[in-house]
Length: 256
Ligand code: ADP
Ligand code: MG
Image 1 (cartoon, rainbow, N blue to C red):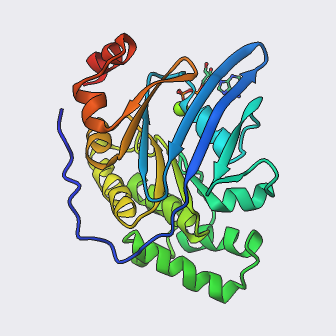
Image 2: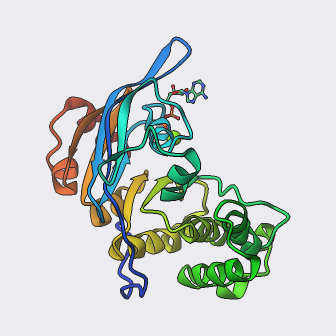
């Protein structure tokens, strides 16, 4: 296994993270129960990586955390506060999410992709929104690409714009769902570095990833999911070097 070099100078940006806890999350699509009582907790400023086979419910669990999917039962607490009574727009501002396919608006520039939500959701005036967007683009190293459309950017740059867009909303938690899986190999490192930088800045992060090197290096805790439940979780050394459950051992033998 090659471990990417994630050493970067500490970022200037510091983040105010909040804890996020999911208790006994259940979710069914028709007759199929895809989450069967999943538990997850990240303390403020912690990075939790979720690993596991395809179809094990990782994406569904993330989507349940910020209300993109409606769970059948279970509780989600943000900063200790029950989110079920929270306004859904506020919840999605507080818990930002970045996807495998960047979901940028193709006909808008990088800057406009960021200002759009600031103006529409946060009701921030256009000129102030532009200032914030430019600052976030600077944070992800793309200030000089503000006027470019997605097609004029590499996949890695597009993903960094998507991360900047999520950060512009000043979330307390960031969810990442396989954000490097669609990237050409040579572009993966830049995005992982940015994520490591966010982690160092104190952002609370829940990261679904196949990048085991990233999980080992950056995660405070690694969670292994299979068939809709968390099978095992612990510090990276425990999960990767001393796995206990046969299912995790088998998974690691396939991916490492
Ligand atoms: P993972 O992210 O671990 O690959 P997912 O959360 O995407 O897993 O999917 C878990 C299970 O739920 C899979 O069996 C998948 O086919 C199913 N599933 C996901 N989304 C839907 C949906 N919208 N409708 C029906 N089944 C779904
Ligand atoms: Mg998925």
